[in-house]
Length: 369
Ligand SMILES: NC(=O)C1=CN([C@@H]2O[C@H](COP(=O)(O)OP(=O)(O)OC[C@H]3O[C@@H](n4cnc5c(N)ncnc54)[C@H](O)[C@@H]3O)[C@@H](O)[C@H]2O)C=CC1
Ligand SMILES: C[C@@H](CO)CCC[C@@H](C)[C@H]1CC[C@H]2[C@@H]3[C@H](O)CC4=CC(=O)CC[C@]4(C)[C@H]3CC[C@]12C
Image 1 (tube, helix red, strand yellow):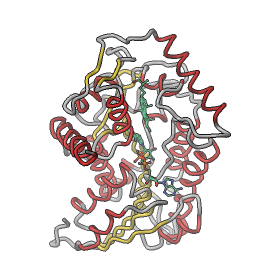
Image 2 (cartoon, helix red, strand yellow):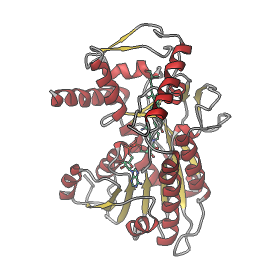
Image 3 (cartoon, protein in one colour):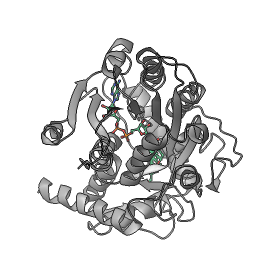
């Protein structure tokens, strides 16, 4: 909890504070930000776990609200010093319409920026995504690249398009005058694929493995590297950026940072096995069991079924042409920009991140029995 020796003066607002990443950011702020006086948690859906936070020394205010509603955002932000904007619609499975994704991710971000200007909130940290860069529609590999690595970032899918547009808005807003005349300082963090406690896709893959008798079948060559980062380290990076933005505005304002840690470079499936293996699942095959053209056909079939069934029900399996391309294209990051600009070092080692994730999966498993 916050060190009471330091003055508790700051008001933070976390949008999407009840999501997978948002909850970790909220808990990390309460543990690691001694200057926090009030923490506002803004989300479309508030979780029951928030109640336990209200007994600590920091005032925790929960706000059920929608980022697409400009007046709700502005009302929540009045008097806040820092906003960490993690709220977003994360959908690569065709559950939401492209219009809804745009509305939440782009219009929602515009509303946050305008609310900063209107209310005088000076520091904005935006959760962007590796997807703003790639993999692109051509499936070009991005092998251990950094923030300056040239890459043809061309997207068609609504999710990366929306994240790219929103990130651009955030970066362009850096330096705008907010109420009171001081400049807005903004910054965007680009996590690669986040894993850790609360990761819904990991849960889904685990359940899929159970349904298949404790087995998963390799679909992606082991040589395709997919960047992953532990949720606790992503949260830590958000807390550090928020803390350092004021002092290092000239260096950090308008910048983007990949979120990285010491998680190993592996294929999406091999990486998941680091957690699913200790939970009793087995990955069958050292090479993909089906040829790629057949997987593409199955993915296309899933897309067609989704479209045909849409009037009756929502069919949104994990495999579709976009997720297949994502999993099958090398995209990994190797950078030290965050360390150079604001002294970031991962708070959790790979071993700790792995252990925490396994413990969470095992607890989830035993509570389901
Ligand atoms: N999960 C991942 O691997 C990655 C996620 N990101 C980004 O991180 C952020 C958080 O993602 P996750 O925690 O994974 O997703 P999540 O779906 O668990 O959390 C998003 C939160 O935003 C809230 N939200 C959605 N629409 C809202 C609205 N209209 N108004 C207010 N709140 C709303 C949701 O209720 C949810 O609590 C997102 O911006 C996402 O684009 C970036 C890179 C990787
Ligand atoms: C082809 C299947 C065979 O096992 C595996 C399908 C896996 C996919 C569901 C995932 C592969 C890559 C993931 C994405 C990636 O980690 C980057 C992301 C960044 C974000 O900002 C949001 C989440 C995601 C799009 C993530 C979603 C799930 C995958 C597509």
